[in-house]
Image 1 (cartoon, rainbow, N blue to C red):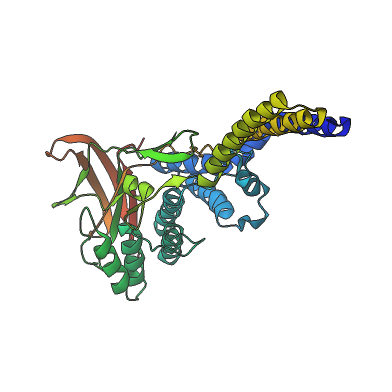
Image 2: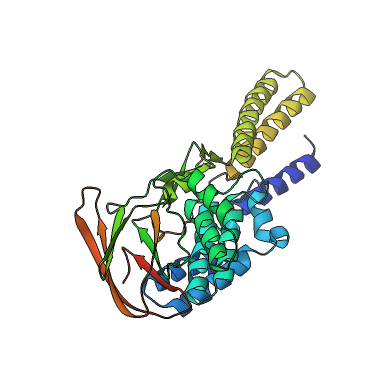
Length: 370
């Protein structure tokens, strides 16, 4: 075997070893997770009533989510065989991006901007519809329902959006629009789904179902009492697209890892056999070269990282609901009882609010409100 060949092989092994030892600085890690941090901080602020902070975080996150990713070097790195998916800048799975736009839509409506709220809900629908491939349609009930309600409030026709919401309703059918309803209750319950990696190499992204022991909300204000159930289920949305169960698998990387490992094993065995059985220096060198190539293939396989990205927006709810009531101008108090399916009240929230003529009063109430 020539010295030149041995030298090139040594350099190759060194390069592969260095690739496997690459580390990420804390600053780079923070940059890659910035959107995730903004998502989670926004949800916390929204539940705590710090709406300016929630707006700031969501605007910052959505500016990055909506940007063209063509120049994102981290996304290109993540597609490489030797980098994990988590090296890319976090944008979230479709259901996470939908929720960011959904929350922003609530805040726009809260600010008296139903036109911008409708635009946010429509942007949410685009995220669920797989904008990269144009392969699916949004099947979130509230996204379409609120799109239509905003249109009605703006003097337009929300009939098509309402029909879509009813068609997609699996849990409860939303009521017809009441253009005079002036107090909007946005409700959320439970803890959302959690991601985990499965498969031989952790290449499968899977979800543990979320939970909501209180899937029913009863709103009481004045002489009105309204019982509402959930319209959207985040566990369902995380694991399906248009009702079809999704396989989140980094198949290409897993196949490459398997193939290079198998090829390496075969080459080592074959090369060793040739080297041992060879009756000349040339034959022995050929066998050793083949075995060495097998070792390199095994190293390439070991350096391949098909692990799924399990970073997640960890403080999302599991269920979403909504109600619209008519109330006269003035000061009001509402009590929201989050109940179990049997009717047992598990959590009670009380909110005081002012109804102003000429605009909607928007209330966001979570069973985890602080």
